[in-house]
Image 1 (cartoon, helix red, strand yellow):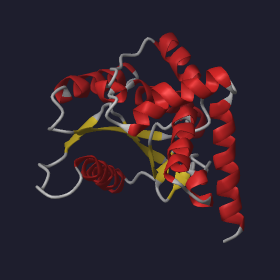
Image 2 (cartoon, one colour; image 1 turned 90 degrees about the horizontal axis):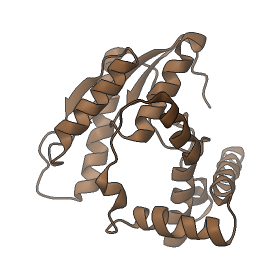
Image 3 (cartoon, one colour; image 1 turned 90 degrees about the vertical axis):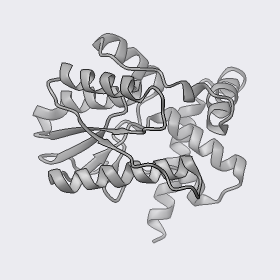
Image 4 (cartoon, helix red, strand yellow; image 1 turned 120 degrees about the vertical axis):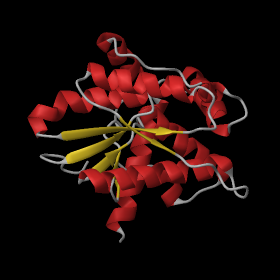
Length: 216
C-alpha cells in the first residue's frame, strides 16, 4: 500500500455496499492519517435506477459528514463496447476530479473476493504471470485500500454501521462471466475444495505482482 498520510483522496462512490464501506473505512482513518476525502458519484444516464443510486450515495456520504460530488457521463458514441466505454469514461471523470481537488489518489472499492474473481477470470481466459497478478494495490493514481479485506468482513461491518447502500441488479445477471464466477464457481470452490480459496488466490496475485516488480 502507498503511504496515504496527509493527502487528499477521491473516493469512487457508487452507492453500492463495497464503495460505501470504503468511504466509511477511510473516514474512520481520516483523523489518524490527516486525510481529505472527496466522494464522487459518476452518473450513468443509461442506467434506469441512476437517480436512486445517486441519492443513496449522497445520503451515505452525508451521514458520514461528507458532501458527495456528482458528475455525469456524456451519451455514448455509436461504435465500441458499451461496458468498456463506460468504465473508461468513469475513470476519466475520476481523474479529472482528482486534478481539480488536488488529491493524490483515487480510491476504488475492490476487496479480496474481487481479487480472487479476477485471478480466476484470467486463468480461465489463459494468462501468464501478469494475469495472475490481477489488480495491484496501486496503479499510478488508483489505489485499492480494501483489497486485503474479505467480502464477509465488508458485509459484517456494513451491518454494524447501518449506513445506506443499494444492491446492483447487474451483479446478479447471468449474462456476465464475472457474475458466474462470483455466484457459481467461487462458492463451489469454497464448498468443495478450500473455504479460504479467496484468500489463497489473493496471496497468489500478491506473489505474482512481487515477482513482476522484482524482475523489472
